[in-house]
Image (cartoon, rainbow, N blue to C red; front, side, top):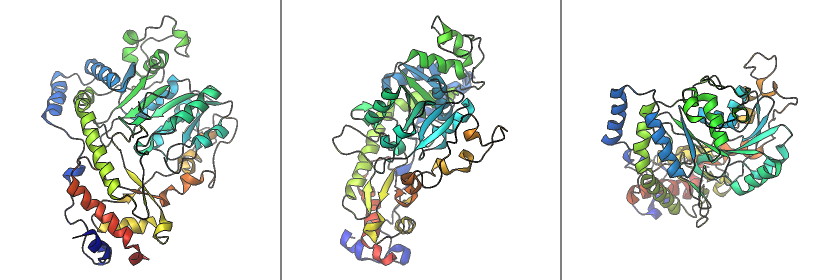
Length: 435
């Protein structure tokens, strides 16, 4: 059926024929695993070395070669990697960390465990990453670091963020959990800030089970990270002669984790990670071709805008984790995004709600007294009320009305991708039926 016929047909949600009658599961299946992954994991299980770190060291070395970072430390998950990164750059009691309000909670909630507090900044309406224009006015003498989240794979504006950080002598933590292998102006995401944290859990674009990675070029940050949560490696990996400038505990590191937590990765994940890393660049390129093909097919369709960097900018979306698109209701007669999503779903378009809940409005960040301080934990360690009220971060608060979740293709199969794109075109070009 031609595109012209599709757009003149009654919408499927109103009883018409579906634009995509042949929905695929295989084009979305992830991660791609083979007998090589299975064998690597089985070898760890049979050796009973799940809690050792010989394979994890090899994985760290290979990840460092891929990323271009000298020091890499594997973790049980990305949350632990990011909390350790905060400690490693010096975040402690009474400090503030600037974080985008639109992100997964693990980009900032761990500050509470360090006696610090997150201060949320708004997001850029195009990139959906932290808006550099909103960062500087939130800096105080208590500010210690900025967390730059590459949200849904889109690179944050690192040039501007780094300039602000240098001006105010702040550390920059990159949260790369959505952006494995992505580029910012030709440079690998995760190599621009002082330290980077990656989640590698089962749904990420680099997926190896439940795991994380910390990457840095700073030996001091690396050794502080080891001291915080990798107690079993302190004797072999800490090399600075004067530990007093590494840890804030009178220089004593005796095999106990300073953070009182264990960050070690399970070596079944490390083993799978080594195999996945061998094939990830090729598989990532396939995803990029497929997703760019999909958005090229939607170029000029009313109500829809791609969430991706400009062409020829040197920036890419990496594995394009959790793809979303911009929704412009004004071009579709004010049609609410929810109705558009429901109609595309009915056409077989694999569409859903997009965007995260604004963290600055969450009760845990405003009301919860987690540690029995007699006041909300968010303000328990600071001398001012950092809580932010509705209306304070307008772009973040209205994001759910202006984005939608898009299909995440793992294979560049033109005919199948065209069918999914047809579902979006049909609804966008026939939106009057829904008004």
